[in-house]
Image 1 (cartoon, rainbow, N blue to C red):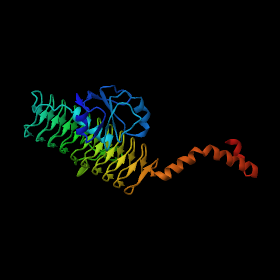
Image 2 (image 1 turned 90 degrees about the vertical axis):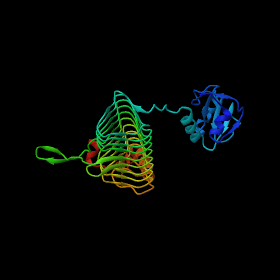
Image 3 (image 1 turned 30 degrees about the horizontal axis):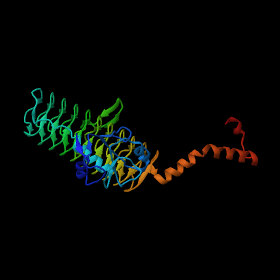
Image 4 (image 1 turned 180 degrees about the vertical axis):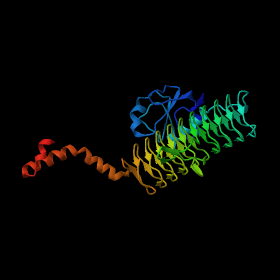
Length: 344
């Protein structure tokens, strides 16, 4: 890339404080940026790094006299950064067509504007929309549907009857539509319950590398429009996730749980099966959600409780050693210490 600062400001509705003709060749962090790079200040905790930075220009929310170099003042530096990265480092779009090494099953319908890469395997009756991209070694089962502009990265696997909405992205190694984990107990051991449902992924969803979304026992496992799922996330059978949810790395949602619109699960959060997690709920990292949560709450801990209660619990835990010493001292002074004291 080689854009002037003035052009960059135009793209993000910003104002240049400095030289609008300064040439910018890259975007880097404050610590790594040089005189021909643009960087960004997204919070006061990075202010010292911004003062030390050698960046030629910095995206800021307000003009700062304590920073050297040029500045681009924008309403929201983080959003401006996202837009610039999207434009300046756009992912190449492969040419339409079906690679000679791809295996295409009978009755498939592939839009002429779609790209089907090397060694892709398509089962019977697969539908692929306009502008969709299937990178090398993707495997798509029978009767799957892939919407317009969807992107499937290498080694994604879709089991039969999985559906991907328009503009959705599935990263490498993700598996959609594998059997849900359903068994009955028999005298000779667990007996598998056939999982005969499917998976439905909405539009503009992103699913991270090596994540899994299991097919339903009956009906559909659903992920709503605009939801973002990080790497190494497990979504169990018959789960329903609303619109605009965020599931961070290593989160796990057990079968038949319901997550409302805008739910945020921090890293390694676990949600037990058959629960209702209301719209806008936020669960802190490593929380274990064992009971339903009403809309709008923020929870934390194992088991998860309202975050205010969790903070009070943690404050008490930090004082346990002190409280124990005080209790033992009180017992000894009052003669209440039992014979078991010597055993402790």
